Amino acid sequence: MTTPIQKIVSVYRKQKCSSLRDFARDLSDGLNKEDQVTYETIRNWERGEYKPNFGLLMTLVMKTRDWRMDFAFDILAAMRPEIYEPMTQIGRDALKLAALEKEK
Image (cartoon, rainbow, N blue to C red; front, side, top):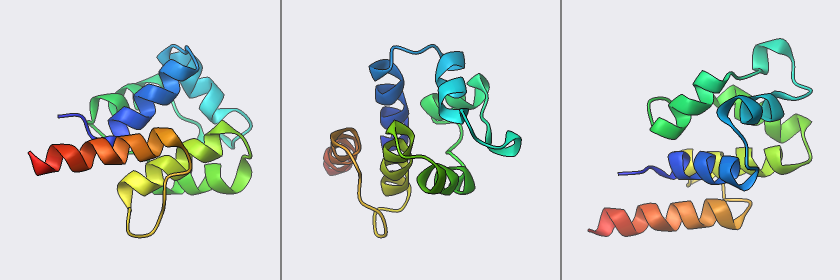
């Protein structure tokens, strides 16, 4: 079963037509060294092995004003739907899919 986080990461990466390495580089662009992510991190998020770090997501929200801010809000909505709402249709679709799978 695919989680909303897996779906969000996968759709954003496919939408950018990026390899794991390129997506990690683009996501990390302009961030401090400690906030940068590797291609292994992206792979682990897509596989559902790990979730994105809350601190990284908040850094993206606070420091970026592009697709990365939308990405962060969509992931935050998947992690904490009682607090955050998805920023894009990608996030809304991922949460709807998860709700439908729970009903099965």
